[in-house]
Image (cartoon, rainbow, N blue to C red; front, side):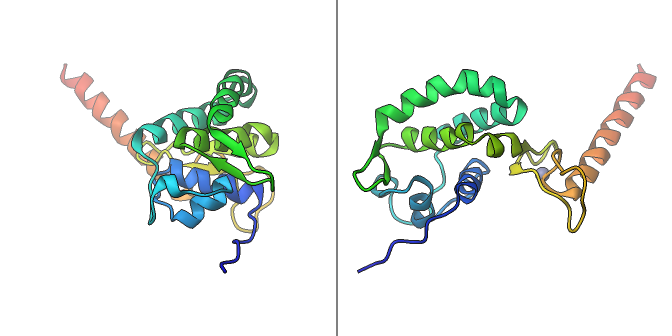
Length: 176
Ligand SMILES: [Zn+2]
């Protein structure tokens, strides 16, 4: 008999959801961890989130990262409805999503339900990245957490990209 994988913390589950939003194909076991139930509907091996679902998940995460309170007002009713229609709570307390939208809705609901997680959600500003991540503190540093870029290097790359664009624009203006 297979033993169930150890339960993940809420934060770890939300991190899995961010992986899915960031386009990482996840193993069935990860999906199972995420929604806590069976994932037969999602096939066997590594399964990325289908693009349509991924975009709607990203739109929701973007709202949460931008303005948690506003997202709570707008998203909560929609998410409640979607989750109700395709998520089943089993008698032993496991969550079964009967369809992908329900699994996504349930994931978003986690973010909305846990204000500490919702407020810690960030969206990398580097134009070629756009990853969702949790705010973090650079190794051993205290003080304000990093919220703008998922990696310090992405801040530098964004500065370089923005400066190059400004230069190009200026050159164009001179020519005109
Ligand atoms: Zn980044």
